[in-house]
Amino acid sequence: MQKTILAVLTVLASAIIPTMAQANTRGSLRIVVDGIRQQQGQVCVSLFAGSQGFPDRGDRAARAQCVPAGKRTAVTFENIAFGNYAIAVYHDRNGNGKLDRNFLGIPTEGFGFSRNPVIRTGAPKFNEAAVFVAGTETIAQIQLQYF
Image (cartoon, rainbow, N blue to C red):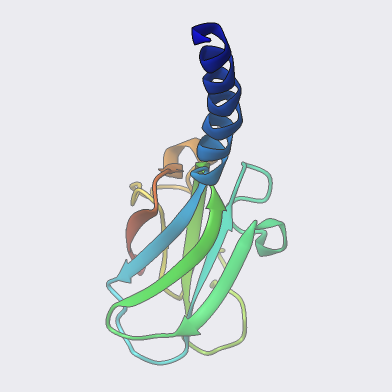
């Protein structure tokens, strides 16, 4: 009798435990953008699941969204698989859908990246900006930079 009960419990546990583990492999990522100088235009956020296309190929982003600019702007991506992501943000002040640059290639609109790396001669690498998404909600705060 005890062997039968143990066998039934083992079968039930093997069916329930994987389901519980699978149920908790996705969460949300809330991106809070600070340092927006003017509340005009839009703030565009691109979420990259790998280094391909990061940071300036929005067409290769896993998710992307633009929202009206405010003093502090937030975007939330729901149902994100746990893992490493890098975020690129820019303040599209004139609403033309791109980060404007001067003739030297220097951005003329605000921009930023997850983990707020120091920008010297170019954009950060994926690993320098990667954040790990885990749990029900992960929050990434990004401070825009202007030249």
